[in-house]
Image (cartoon, rainbow, N blue to C red; front, side, top):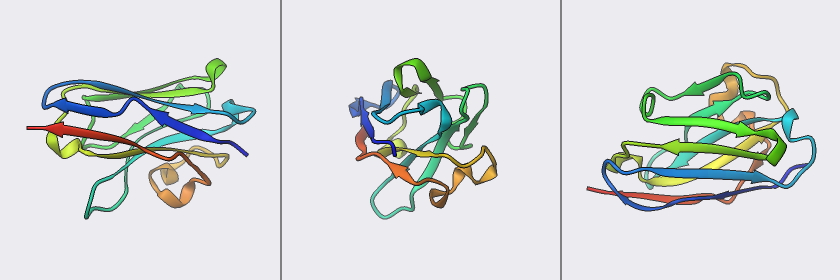
Length: 126
C-alpha cells in the first residue's frame, strides 16, 4: 500500500513553468512505476508521463514532449514533473499514480495503476 500526495500546481501565464511533486508515504517506493496523468473538464484522463522504478526510463506524451521532464528521487519517496513552456491547453488537474506492475506500454493506461493521489490544479492563462 502506498499513499500519494501531489503539490506544486497553480496559476501561470502561457510560457511559464511549474514543478509538480508527488510524495509517497508508503514503503519500498522504488518498487513502483509512477505516472503523471491529467484531467481537464470534458476530456478523458490523459497520461502525460511515466517513469520506471529506477528512473532510467521515461515515457512522454507527444503533446508535452520537449516541454515536460519527469524524474524521481527514490531516497526521498518523491517524483517530479517539471513543466516548462506551458500552454493554455495544459490546464487540468494533474494526478500521480503508482503501480507494482512491470514497465510496459500499458503505463499510459489508467487501468495500469492501483494507487492515485488527490490531484493538483494547474491553470495556464493565455
